Image (cartoon, rainbow, N blue to C red; front, side, top):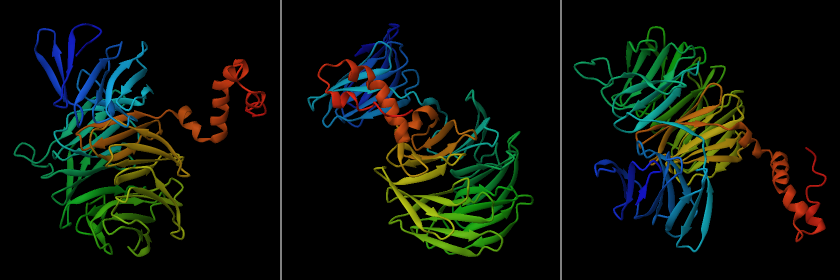
Length: 451
């Protein structure tokens, strides 16, 4: 049991895997399903903004005590974590485990906000080109529009009902803004594609033609063509102006999960359950190339801003980088511990973001070096989107939340080895200079390292 620093809240931990938050008068505020095994210890941060929990499941979790959202997960103990405590500045934690170790953890303050409100899985997330609006799509048949940067809900485009006859009649699996930001396209589980007017949420048109659910939609860079990917194994191309479809791309032997236009809009890449990525010429629908290499379903595909590299994400737990000109496999990125559901390049092409069934979002350098892992979702992460300025990432999850993350570009510079060495030597300077146990050879380690 733990009291909040303000003394007005009590948290209790239990063998039933939950944490309960109580008012001091004994009324229950909320119950957090916190871990997959017994919760051994809990502790409030000195500023009262965070609650930490240690569990038999070997993890340390950080929670927002006001709304019960998961902020971060620490992994490292090989046996159960028995106790946890914060430093006075609330930024460092110490935990003790049955593995006979005491571990220090530095808080990651990348998480800006958790957006709540969806009743079921959130399947898709997309920033508008202006960066002041975020669209999310959910299994509860709704599309939500959020103001950025104040992160408040602007509007909900409701699912089908008597009061809302224009809405989707099944879960919404994909959402995308047109290049000018004035139109939103959505992909529905009932097999429909819908076009919406951004400024007021008016439903412009329903595009029908697919025989099964539509998983994803993408606008061409010019904004005149919309591509849709479906479980019926096809991709359809539609004229945005009148909503008429003009071409069906066939060739995949399984469900098509994702489509992506090249920056010029002349070619289209598709990802499928048949373990392949296919590249198509948009003008005539000709299949140009099939990329083979994944050993399981390919669920994500993305062009870099230069248009010469394609990244693909697969249930085989890998991301692959391909050269567009000849289809050559350039690199395989390994780091996720479960299926990778999506992948996208940052607006400047310097980073790659991937999301996975392992509940994480990862950042990689364009060369495939793993930079950072974002923990916080309690279920599979379903989609990811960079803000247009590249300073934020939005992720959606099966836990029903959308999380907005800050990208610390200074921190990510540590992927430059020389920069990392310089920073390390700065930190070690006093130790190397003043520790009598350090040999002269060790003291000179950083002597001729140029900044």
